[in-house]
Image (cartoon, rainbow, N blue to C red):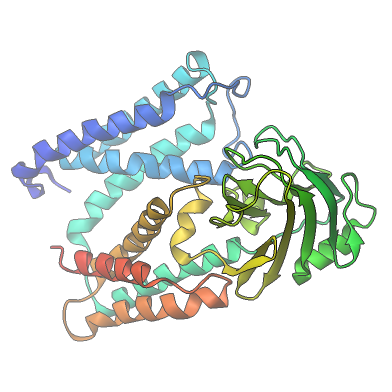
Length: 393
């Protein structure tokens, strides 16, 4: 985009936005984590357990900064170079100064690519063409993202040796102070050591057979504390269930984890609110076509599943996130999915076809790929995104 194409009136607000984004980036990347980071510079493009999600987040982090810089009048090449220089400075600081942070080639490449994407976006927006066909393509694209989300969130049980764990002290979680009395699935006992029949357990998990755990409840926890978990011979979390304060949380390994994306969590809020120390706690987990069912002391909550708007959870994990905050993130994702449809669809004739496809597909596609039905609030956010972009110049 030429500088003349950006109204002078927008340059100052864009400059302020660029400074604000710089502050956000520095706050997110240079705050010490308090733990030891990896030794030395990580030369792999996708490094770490969540390499792909970290790479995507690094791209997305620098897109708004590049957009703000371009809109404030900075030339395209300077915007990309500034992004590269900023990222390089951050990685050097993480390597030499900030404890607990890891410096990696993937971060540098992702940040720079984010700058390129931001520059390209600003250049494309004023010259984009609208048509009904492009609107349909935008609708199909939004549905493809939803379908990919559902397929990535499907369970994945690796063909390895499994280990049962009763109230394990795993370090990353709180240690549950209760006592497991028994654990079994499909009549097979699950002891707190190597499982002799891992293959059979894996097939039962795939079939959705109910897992039952009986325990003596411990004190209320301050964060997630596993009652029962299954890890494999490569120290990968396969399944985990336990209380988090008054909630009951469930982790099941998914295809997303195999793709180096973030693990996800299902939660039954208030499930163990009435359970006190010393009470008998019976926990069950089973999978069905409409999601998971969790049981706690004679009560059961079914249809626990992810929605299309929870695609964000593949990139960032916020355990115990408040329902209102989660709903806000879900709606933001759906709003963003609606923007491409509105940006390229025609404003007359068959221009509404893209919106119809996006909305109808949001109802039809999720159940086909294992997602929960899309809530009305998320549908409204999608429609709002389409409408806002449709009205844009």
